[in-house]
Image 1: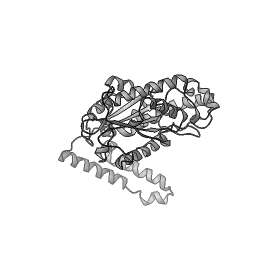
Image 2 (image 1 turned 120 degrees about the vertical axis):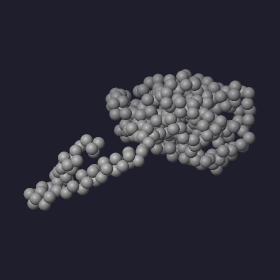
Image 3 (image 1 turned 180 degrees about the horizontal axis):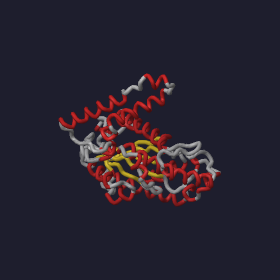
Image 4 (image 1 turned 90 degrees about the horizontal axis):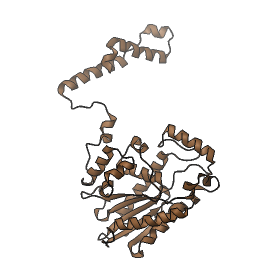
Length: 329
């Protein structure tokens, strides 16, 4: 991780999904109302209000600490702005540095007005194709959301480094991002360098549910500072991912967790420490491969009128016969 201004580092970054919306209750709402204008239900309002109380208690250590401040980022959608409005009821004005609408943490774009039967078919196709790369017609894929959330993260760090939030270092700084389920999962994926395969296994946040990334003793952020292993397992994190969170809770900022297979081992097979004999044997195999690929067809092949693609294939085939396929594996 880049060496950011340590005095201004947030104590916590909290990701909150909006409360229950009319679209969560009745999918046909999207057929007549633009996605960005879908409101909260009455239950969603109450969920958001409760989430505000819970977040305040996390930040204040059950109202026993008072040297803290909070700054909010919010998606421009009606349901997220309404969620923030209810969350804000749990905070005094003096504890809130400010709030900003951030369009890059908006919901995944599913297209415009969504015809319910067509969307059902499309979502079934997405399950077969894969949630991360499937792009909705006239909309976005999760990969597209990843790109814009990554851009937001860069801006977030600039805000911190340049102290654009006007934070007094004597107070704990808490950033609360009120967003959507997929955007929050993609945020965590980007931050913790999770793979696409790991993302596919993650469960969505419930309405008004939140995740707390807290600064550990060594200066790295971890979900394990606030959440239990059982909670994280319920979110879809594997045992390796949970172990990495536990490592981060005490690791120095920028430390590399060599036990994380997806940082290295998952990309290779059977990597071992090389001996001099290994290097010599490998060079012999590489020389055979070079000779095979440089094997030239004779002039008779050209005179017979064989095209270049056929000759290239013939070269490889003759090379394999010459050296044997086993040696080339």
